[in-house]
Length: 506
Figure 1 (cartoon, rainbow, N blue to C red):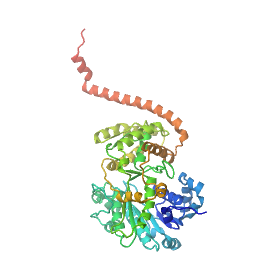
Figure 2: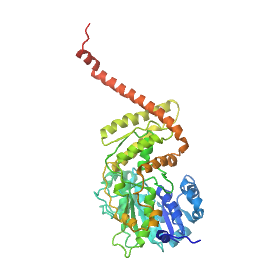
Figure 3: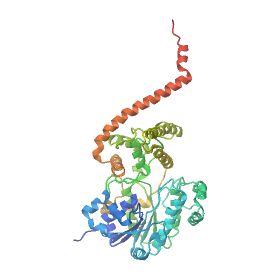
Figure 4: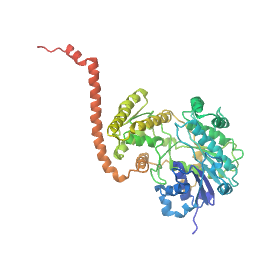
């Protein structure tokens, strides 16, 4: 039976795709979307390292059991056979490939999606350089040997040029050279490197954006000899629709905040609520990635500068952080998580003093109290460790939630303008028709189902628990406030002052 293909699907017909980082959040969604919507492709090759004693083949089998691959199993099960997996790792030369596997990759690959990276914003510089910078160089070195290479898409981040007031779709210069940093990481010991890291990073807030910026320079320097493209998504959030509404598999960024707040663990965070959020649903970002090589193939002549795309949503669709947090709080109460540690009643503030008071009273004190009770009852303590991790994560995140960002996405917007109606539907990158409240709802439920593994059938029980936690929260707050007022009154001798001011007659 002949299947009518859209222009984008026709472009991917008989193509072989090579993906690094296919086991990550965006990597899984990319793999699924390619198999489902670009069903005339020839092959998708992914690399994966053994993990927890599981071979790459076993990890792939487990990946295919995830709910996001169910529609492929139902509608196009034959596509799963077009995935080839090799043991590989971007921290090894030649990506850990050798012999027949390396030969197969270099002789057949048409398009590379380089997505492997460490996303730990608070990670050390050595690891960030090894994964994000050296890993990119290793991927480029393998791509140089590819005889049929048409496009090498490097996944960066929209925040890698945080010293710019306006971020255009171009590569910005930086005083540090990628080669110098790679050499530095090779001979300098970790302790010394950690000591000089704060000075190296300026003006970057963390090793992630710093290493990603250097990686862009490295990719840019290969543009003369290779068909390289840079893609910069903003903060990636749960899926709007594909492969499942609300799909997410990690607690990074806003998802972690919504889950932490919904569980009653996060009670306060520093954030300028009036600023607009810079987020993009994962399926919108992935559709954008898939369209990049197709869009560049239409150019009549090769651009003088490397193609760069800021993958962001339209300004009119950007909600404020306050709106997100307010709606997230309301939805967290309507669709509560199981067994929260406390009633979800946190807040955001731009005052560090107020945030510190709230953190001490409503996050650290309960954490110490819970760990003390666990110690008394002979159970394993965990709250202080969890609270420390949350504190580090919130401190890193506040850099992005207390600053105004201005991304220009002219190139990305041009893709949509040039797409036909069929491809606009299949590879959706415009969010004008997305209901923001409904999207927040599916994001909360997605975090509940896919990250916390809490089925929707537990909602009635969770609502009962939430009512109990509400009463307990109000009782405890009343006791704390009463205790503080009593302590202050004793210190200031308020009762004696009142009696002296209004003496009683005998």
